[in-house]
Length: 234
Ligand code: ATP
Image (cartoon, rainbow, N blue to C red):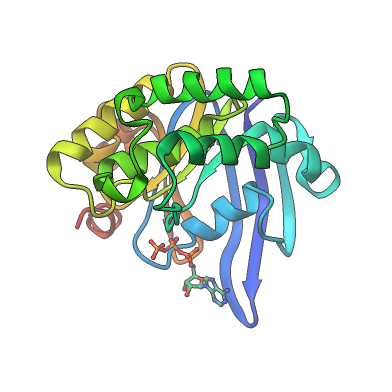
């Protein structure tokens, strides 16, 4: 069974066709979703996260049909949106406790264990009691990943997480994603191929709502689809 199986997925905003019949299969590991601005990456991710309705097709997550069992799927995945507003007056730890409560982790002891675990996973233990407003961009992004890891979901969806990070933070973030993807399925969108080069198991290229390619990055490079490649490398 695939972690995510998408067939004939269509999404229309008014008269604008944002997804024009997408077929996609995700297996454990890192899956890189590539494509320029407006390609439909966020739309696709929000649909899989059960945040956005769709017009046609089928989406299965861990074998569950999103149309019928969306309420079950919600608890089985973690999501870091592209524009993630953190409450800057909270400390990292306070925010994670809040996020854990929102995810339904009501048992105090279990919540504490989860928060300690995710802080360790993203290497933020030493900053956990500092206010988020003092965090660097990279630390905020790692805190965002930490909240997605609460509850230990086996599917993590991350929308353009490296935008605006400096080179050192970007490398650190790539290493984190590589580590996390060893035990999970991570669907990550980016414009920057080097963000996923080292650890990407599968990639797809989305252009104007159509899937132009799905396979390994090596296959993508070998295909030498100049136009496609140019569209994703800034
Ligand atoms: P980016 O890299 O800029 O985030 P993207 O690949 O994530 O782009 P989407 O945000 O999914 O692309 O947008 C796909 C297309 O759908 C774009 O042309 C966008 O303008 C359009 N779109 C997105 N949301 C809406 C909406 N709520 N109403 C109308 N059009 C929308």
